[in-house]
Amino acid sequence: LSESMSQQNSTMYRMHALNDASAAWDSLRQGEKMKNSTYLHKFKSVAQAYEQAGGFLGDARTKRFPTPDEREEYLAVRFLVRSDPKRYHGLVAHVMNQYTCGQNIYPTTLSKAYHMLVNYKPLVAPSARRNNNGRRGDQNSGNGDSDSHAFHSSTEQ
Image (cartoon, rainbow, N blue to C red; front, side, top):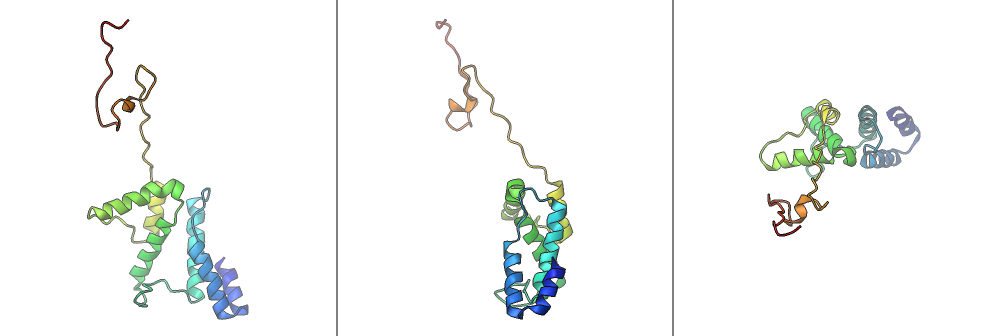
């Protein structure tokens, strides 16, 4: 992809090439069925093409060019947050919540972000147990926070 963008840049007006590269960069997301390795390859290619076309991977507010470490961290976080939301929403939420609680576990390199996706194990909610009436146990308590049990009186038969 970056090779075709580079070839396009030599035959296309510079601002037009930058516009196309910017659109590709802004729309890049991991597809629902896209393998992580494919996403990583595409991500790197589109990022490279965007920079080669004149795109800026720094703090747009300050227009300061990032250090190599800041650039790598920016790419790592963008790779994480633009991953497939169906598969990785829980991971992104976990990283955000940890930061809120004072623990920064955001990836600092693209390889660490890739490692997070590849090794992520989503939490599986336990199935709701059913009571004797065939209803979920949490229907009696209203919010599922109670350990109350339904008892039959000895007079009922």
